[in-house]
Length: 282
Figure (tube, one colour):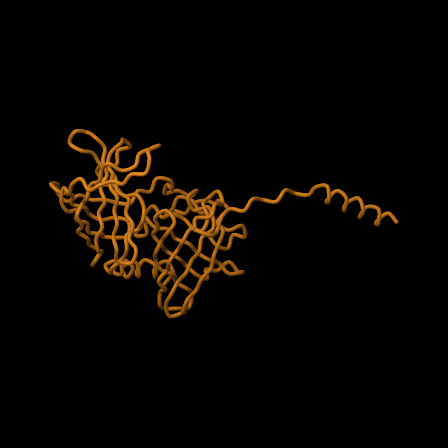
């Protein structure tokens, strides 16, 4: 069976694993049907351990803007928490002052179907689909540019490698353009058709140009999950992927950051060339 065929066969395993418990990604979330490019309501969600925190910006029936806070315990990919509203807090330029509880319209209920999607039920409303908003990375070749880390765990133990994708290449019949390392031995492409559509497929070649490893993952913004397959190894490795730099080279973590380039010392280069010329003429 070919490596690509094995990727297709084992895709079912990945989707089965998604039924296990997971933490939704921290970030900006929205009711999917309300994403229309106009001012509306939205949610900032974060989960640490099993503690769920959501800040929501919305409006009163009068049209006045307001915000709510919900804190609860995430269990089995679900959470129910009271929505609390506050008022009277500090405004721009004010002296120190604290907000006070100003009401509780009811309980918000959420159930997550993946780390980036799920359903929400607000007080007085039916259940609606929601998702984490990706507003800066289109499903395009350009979004793959930068440094990525690939960490897998399985029968091979823990494997890890980091690559810098810098070089644009043509597209395959199932994707929209390959982004590769400068030596052409590692490349990735968004998949746009077939059973892998919606994910990213990467291959690593050895010095002879043969596939050494294949990676398939689905990602949102800076984080992805999937599996890795290695030639000669029957079992797939669970895969965790992270974007370490943006396409422009800015670090995405809390430590790694873009380092300013040192100015080139062309004067020193000129001096050394002159010295070399004198030596060669003697």
